[in-house]
Structure formats: structure tokens, C-alpha cells
Length: 167
Image (cartoon, rainbow, N blue to C red; front, top):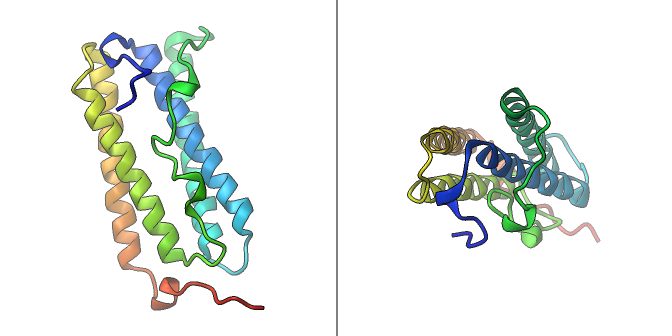
């Protein structure tokens, strides 16, 4: 788990801050991957990561709005160093010739990782509002897993092929 976070002591504001940090980290990582790969053709691996970055940003923005509605501009006390790769794929996990299928496999693993994070955290949480939030977030991640799995099954055969070295 994540020893820098005492889940048993979390209040709702801190839990929202953790969820926001998780989404922001994933957004930043997918944005990095998009820039690293560069766009080569429609629906390439970079497009997969660009769409995921947009999705993660949207989710972070929704959580930020929820936090502001509940806690206005109360300063964040959760240290972002307490979280690392909760939902974000590992930094070195992309390859220059990555197929869209492999990009989606990476995304799927990340969504499963986020589900596991919230699922495990729930066993340590004492606050009922935090339990409700983490249960909702876990269920959203489960839905994301289902959606990505379904999308993978609909990929055309050419989406499974890595790019060839053009040199």
C-alpha cells in the first residue's frame, strides 16, 4: 500500500485531495507519453494517450469542483509525494513503436491499478464520507476497466501491429 498515508485518519477533504492528485498525476503522465510518441497517424498510440489525458483532466476538474463546493479555498494538506503511480502508468512503459493495442493494454493496467488502490484503501478507512467517496471512485475505475476492455475488443486488426523501424 502507501505507507505515507494513514487512511484511518483521512477526512473527506483529504480524501478528495488524494483523488485529485491521483487524477492529475495520470493526466500529466499521459500528456508526457503523448509528447514523447508524437502523432503519426489517426488513432495511433499517441492518440490513445491524448484521449486518456483529456479524460483524466476532466475527472480531476470534477473532483476539484466538488472539493471547492464543500471546502472553498481551504489549503491542501496532503503531500503529493505520498502518492506515486497510483493510476498513472510507469514512466518508462512506452516505446516509440507502440501499437494502439499496446497503448490500450497499458491504459487497462493503469485503470486496474487505480481500482486496486481504492479497493485496498477502503479496508483502512474509518470515516463514512471517505468510505462513500472511495467506494464511488473504485466503482468508477471498475467501469473504466470495463469500457477499456470493450474498446480493446473492437480494435481493428491493424491496431495490434507495432510500427516498423523506418530507417
